[in-house]
Image (cartoon, rainbow, N blue to C red; front, side):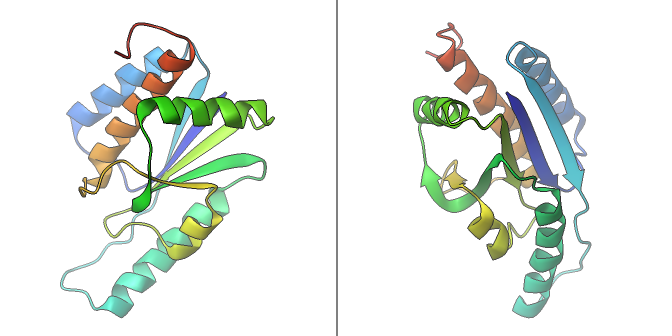
Length: 159
């Protein structure tokens, strides 16, 4: 299975890069992981609601241009559906059995995701009611993707 992460913004912290690279190596056994970084809009705070919406619109357009047909799109959003690791693994299996071979996860920028991206998604997923830095969310997501594959393959990683 091909897993793609569309992430708004560049990863800056070296410890996050190293953690993601470790899980990327581990994931090679199960398929390919591709991370596509999309330009994050620059801004100076404070911002009006209109300015925030314009940032979301521009970033959302970049995300939507990257989405390919026949992909299962998962948008990460605090308001989404919460799944356990086991349920996420079951969702991967369901998608694979339906004949879709590409999972696309979308992580928004500092302000989240444009409503059009959320509407386009096949699943809006929440990892928590907490707000995480979008760069840290990448590492958490990659770890959960790895965990899901170990669950599917009945390996010891997941306890």
